[in-house]
Amino acid sequence: MLRHIPGLQSLKAFEASARHLNFTRAAAELNVTPAAVSHQIKELEEAVGVPLFQRTSRHMQLTRQGQVLKPAIADALEGITRALQKLRQVENPTQVRVTVSPSLAAKWLVPRLDRFLESVPGADVRIDVSSEPLDFDREDIDVAIRFGDGNYPGLVVEKLFHDTLFPVCSPELLKGAKKLREPKDLLQFTLIHLDWEAQGAVWPNWRMWMLAAGVKDFNDTRGLHFSQTSLALQAAIDGHGVALGDSTLVGDDLASGRLVKPFELALRSPAQFAYHLITRRDTAERPMTKAFRNWIIAEAAASQG
Image 1 (cartoon, rainbow, N blue to C red):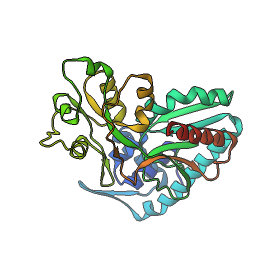
Image 2 (cartoon, rainbow, N blue to C red):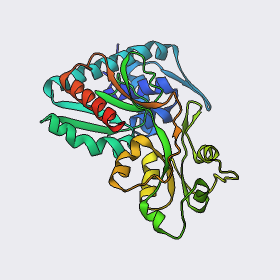
Image 3 (spheres, one colour):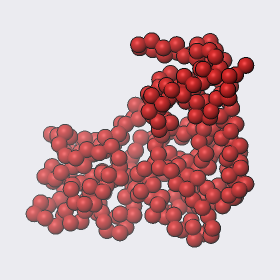
């Protein structure tokens, strides 16, 4: 018999630790310290009266009792999340919770949100900016937009964009003494790089673009390097150099004149990668979720021309 009912935080700490088999990674997921996770696991072990993990200096694994508890706790937390989500949908039918990657949020979604609010008066839109892997079973979200291969079994997935990349810079940069008439002239300018790769696919980069443009002896170690597209584009807007712009994310900046496109040569992003709209099958037809999903699809189609 349990000595006392374990708290929800202890159960969440156990579930995350059992998945990761690492307190540090579990703590990062839960936004707490590893010491807090260790304390919560200790409380749970005291409550059930048996050890749940075997720990050594290098490894951690579940005990036999922990293996029995793991699926039960995971199912229980999933059930709680779904119940709370249904309660929120009943109590707040105008609310829609959206998770979106940082660069798409900053450069594409947020500038357009007023149009959704005008088309759906009274809508309560909650935006969470994240590039973390999706888990609808553990997170209270209605709609997700993620960049990747679109492989989300059991979910409703719709492709939004497939991008091309081309040089962009501030128009002020072209007013200086350095001229940008042909691709080799780029060697005189600071180049802004995006350092990103996933699942073995390398994102189109300056070396690839220079090769396609016929520019030889290119040194890709110099310049500014960023891990977020929105930061690289902001550096270009501020006149710090020339970036390879993602067609989806630079559209508004090109239209407003904040950026210009000095060359037409463009590279296609890897075929397996695109922005996708993702929803749960059991909530995709909920009125507010459906309204937001349909609006996103229409906006994406319009921005692709």
